[in-house]
Image 1 (cartoon, chains in turn purple, brown):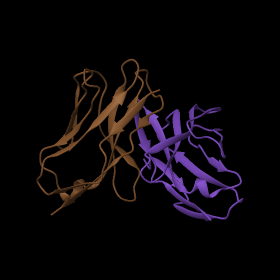
Image 2 (tube, rainbow over the protein chains, first blue to last red):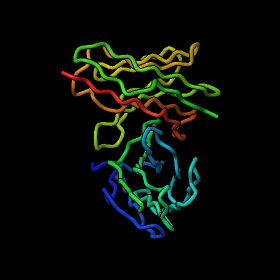
Image 3 (cartoon, each protein chain N blue to C red):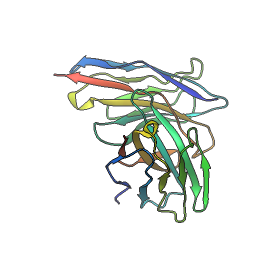
Image 4 (cartoon, rainbow over the protein chains, first blue to last red):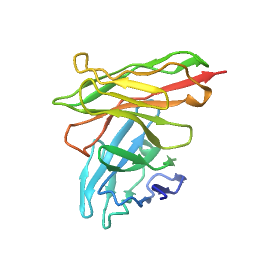
Amino acid sequence: NAGVTQTPKFRILKIGQSMTLQCTQDMNHNYMYWYRQDPGMGLKLIYYSVGAGITDKGEVPNGYNVSRSTTEDFPLRLELAAPSQTSVYFCASAEYNEQFFGPGTRLTVL
Amino acid sequence: GDSVTQMEGPVTLSEEAFLTINCTYTATGYPSLFWYVQYPGEGLQLLLKATKADDKGSNKGFEATYRKETTSFHLEKGSVQVSDSAVYFCALSPDFGNEKLTFGTGTRLTIIP
């Protein structure tokens, strides 16, 4: 099992550009999550999904969009990148109250 | 809403010292409680969990007891090693399965030889 994989590992964007952060899990989990981690601020939930075709907003969804067309994939889309979106992004999947995290994507918006 | 308050860091200890990282929570009902660990450059990993009052979670020499009367879930280890250097996150979820986790802000632990 690869677990939860994320691509890319690092990315630098210019203000106003768009990009998609990819997340794939091979554990057949229904629940998936996107978090951002800012220094000293812990993790904030952006969006989550309870199964293919079902998504919902978390605590900080503005400026992001998600889709869940398959159980395995849960991409996060950034439209019109802003410096406030500079952060480390983590994807996770979950089963029986345990969340499994990917290695993260470090995004810088300049 | 639910919240988790963690001991401010960073924490620096000598090898073989005793570790306590405090965690208190606010939640309705009967949440499940977790400690996650993040090693440098990696994602979070579940360290231990407890799902009901007075349960003790343990793993890799770490322990935490779910104390409903004090709404606490403090992390302890009797003798830390350099390899324990990491960021530790306390978290909770409501008592009905795979719901959203609420995280504390994390405590950075550094162990010096």
